[in-house]
Length: 131
Image 1 (cartoon, rainbow, N blue to C red):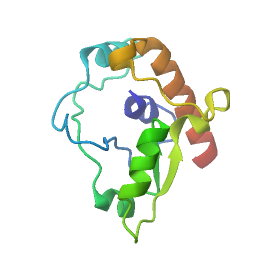
Image 2: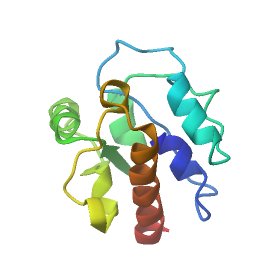
Image 3: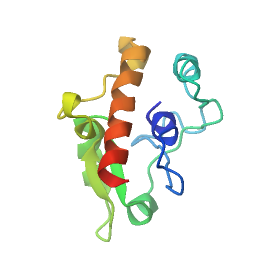
């Protein structure tokens, strides 16, 4: 949902936007049907996305890698190669009303609509900060 929310923001043309997980257990899987439905309700189609795992090359290729929670931020810091150029951050830090918070996991806790609101706010903040 975060990738879809960011891609839908004005001002991201020309940006290379991608999403990946720190673990490989869902590689190749499509987004959860509830995430697809929530994004679709906002005019965003994420149905073609497929899960992939973060690679060492991601740290060299991207300028910024945002983690959805502190646990993943720790994992990203641990896996970053010595020659990484990507800045690592917590995604919700771009949304002042959610700064310092983890994105709740809607797969287990429900609330896809609330999570979409949070990642959309962060997407707007990211574009404002980096656009």
